[in-house]
Image 1 (cartoon, one colour):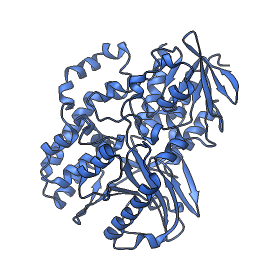
Image 2: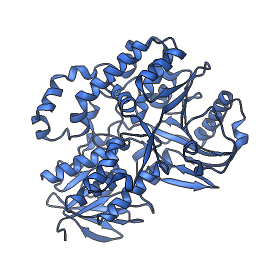
Image 3: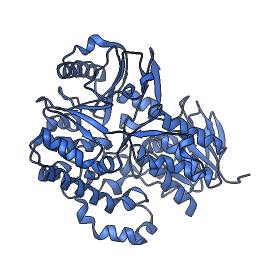
Image 4: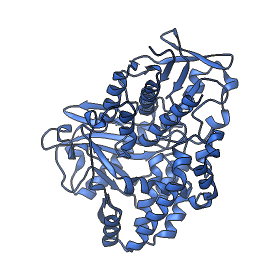
Length: 492
């Protein structure tokens, strides 16, 4: 019987992964989740015969999910399956340009060349540049803590430090992409990757150009059963390892004694653990769960600029569109203006870039016969008290006009059911401060170093995982945050 006990606050994907890793290390693990379901942002719902993945819709780097099963001595394929996409995304431009993004980078270069003025060589050169950034940063910035001395004593870390100039952190993502491409449509396509972690390509460092490599080299996938099957399969594994999940159990406080995290308070009951791991947004962890200990708060970190948020319309559509794929992008005619509205004006541009995901293209049971389940998302600012009801109404009007024009169909007439997620409800459902999807933004060349660490510097036995801490947001990075916590615990 394990003698050490780990308490995890939040059953988001990072919390579940941390629970699995600590259970494998021999801990008794209990997870406390405020909602009645696991997954955090990686959840699902059904409405009028349509199933929707509520949050993340792009699945890359599945090896990080498989690794959790392997660590537990299980065959991942007994729990979780997926298929690689031949087409990663379908792009639509206001000038009528349309093309697919094949999974193979050489095919992608040819496809872009056929539909734009960009030569194949430019695409391949950028791919090599993206890979170089990945190889320099991967082991240092993604898989290890930047807040531990031993990270910097490893040879591969030192080797990466000697090559830091090559990660292109001194210019913006947009400036770097302009240096590679002459066609503005291609610059826009590669600038879009800044939105993968809620940042602004006109401010974020060009180091973020590592993201295309993750997609082009490792590919994009579709899980059998949809994105929520990731959550379901990992919860099943965790439960088989003895992890106990408590739903509808919001943690009220973390209780600290002599600078050690000793207890959590749930339903007014003190529960003791040897270690406590918070998968809650770091802002709420301090301001709510550690509100009795203001001297412990890293106020400078908590005041950092938040990432962008999202406005999502979940539409049941009574028609199928052959010209649409699983992932679709309808670009804005003025990308720079769109980001000025998000980051400077804190509102929504009248011509936003629209992301449209249709899981029923691959999981036919996600929609009734002859129908499609549309996940329609635009990037929006984090909540700072805007009149969201008015912004949502106008955004819906503009999105419908944009899609109706592009698809030559009155989309509003095809909507048979609707649900909406906005920054307010994102914060309410997932405890993401101000509705920001990725914690702090990466609109700073030092952003990777400024993210909150995975262990408290002031409170012993207190750890952090999830998208609001190192290494960042998105499924792969959240899973890596669990690995970093587990490694740190193991070395303590």
